[in-house]
Length: 182
Image (cartoon, helix red, strand yellow):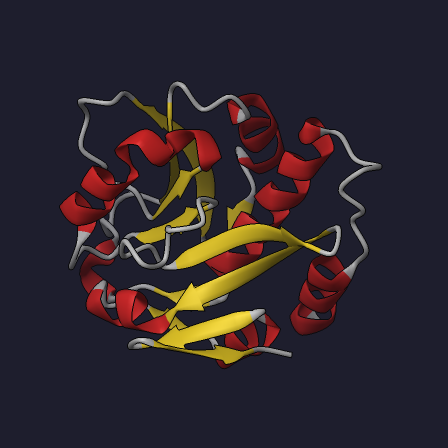
């Protein structure tokens, strides 16, 4: 049942010209939610006494209201999503997912370097996101929201990406090679 829902959400037409930025980021929030369901974190990644699943964004994120409004309080297994706002000087400690929009590109390389080896799923939009060590890149392709995955970056962060998610990706990067998805 989950895979049917994921396929419907991920493959539904989303014409870029007909949707507003608000609608686009609500759809991207749905992608983030499904990514969280289809990635396995290592056993020590979560505090056993805390049932939070923290999605972090920077406080200057222009679409934070769409992300917060769509994701805050949603259940992921036994955990509940909380959207945390970080400032530029704050480390991304306690984050399960960190989202960097196109506007976050000015500090992207530094943030990604600081998270290397930590069990944080990094999702971004900049063209160079995967080459700088990001794990999943969202982008528009023929008017639809698509995503690419950097498996090596996920492996180095000790995250296991579901084969179902890998099959849905537009491309999957293994080392320096990219392979097309569906």
